Image (cartoon, rainbow, N blue to C red; front, side, top):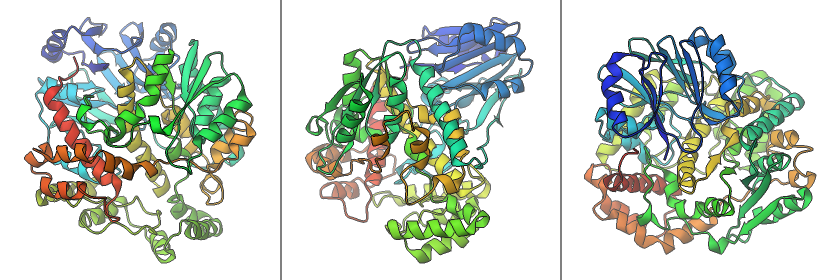
Length: 599
């Protein structure tokens, strides 16, 4: 697996540089000759441009060349000069710059390209893997940071975003890490969400161009690429790729659910496009949830909820790699960006009350919602900090009713019933501490909820990409690109948040790209049909995790209580996500015992 570490242009970084060089790493130097960028790159090496005392390196999915980066480096005088230049680049990548002894490291808005930082030998280090920095600094797991990962949802900024290693922190989305000439680091904001002011026609055109550029940045120069082909989001990416020169091989994983329709819609799309090679994987050939837990050996730098359906998810990447693909395009991120959070109605009510109430009545009838609770949430003007404080108070309360509206800063998560009192207390303290100072990811509830959803899911997709990388396959998720996110979030809420149309923004943006028949789809397979069957068929694997539980050793769960839940069907009051999160933590802790830190 690939990774990198960034060192400041300062003598204090020499011990860390020596430790990294002992691992036989690849290296790129500062203009001074000191080590700057060290690690192991999967696939193509970083693209690097240099001019005088300035170095710019880009790692990830992009279309930048050495000549373009060299030309840019010649124009850069300060780290702030990178803002305007980087803000126009398509793709998904890490940007690392060294300008006259000062360093800037940034990933992307969602965290799909994360930046972590820590201190060692009185200097600041940065990198893209938290466990690598933990190994360099001698950091151990922080049980108090691990405890919030037991929540049934990881959507609790900033509590669940912190790395689980002591002394290692992450750079928030929209920020970069700046390290001065003395090796001292600080985070600086370089991005804010766009104002949602564009009408549908203008916004759809901008999204189409951003998504087209995102796909082109990855597909350019390749002879063959593979794609997921299922819902509207992946269908749009597949159709954009099919318009290029590369041969496209599309994969659809069918479901055991007799109501599933992804495969049927995919066949219609392929028939209308022509020239796309299409493979449908039968539902019976896709392993169920909880299959192969004992064999999971991927070394992640944090728990990965996707481990519960690891073997099932890997069916498509394995097939694509066997077909000869080295790039696989997915529709991950489309739901969070394009579905349109109803929480936007809280702000819309104050700007366009007539439109907002119309949409509220529509959602209330469709979902259905408790109309009284919807009105309460709409009238509530509590800050994000006040909402976090309420979350802390309700960690062990019954879960919100199914008819609870989604107009607040988020859906309050719950601790599972097998969490120990100490674990609950640790999470409650962390949430209350955050409530005192935390600011939302955006000024409005709707944008905050969408960015939080992107942040949570993109972290899991990053881990899926690591799994796929074992087959020599790069997993690309264009909807997580900053330019695509900006284009989607810039559209007016009244145009893209509606109970009467399915993802109207992508539907309008893809006219003339996706076959018209496929644009008419307003459903999506969601996979819950197989979950209960997976729990029943693989119960023995779950029960094995209860034996000598590592989470129990840390005092975070009651293994007997967990076993009692796993021995029977989950009660209606317990969401599947609660078990996913605990299994993810338990499997991750066990993997750490047998796997080495990336080297």
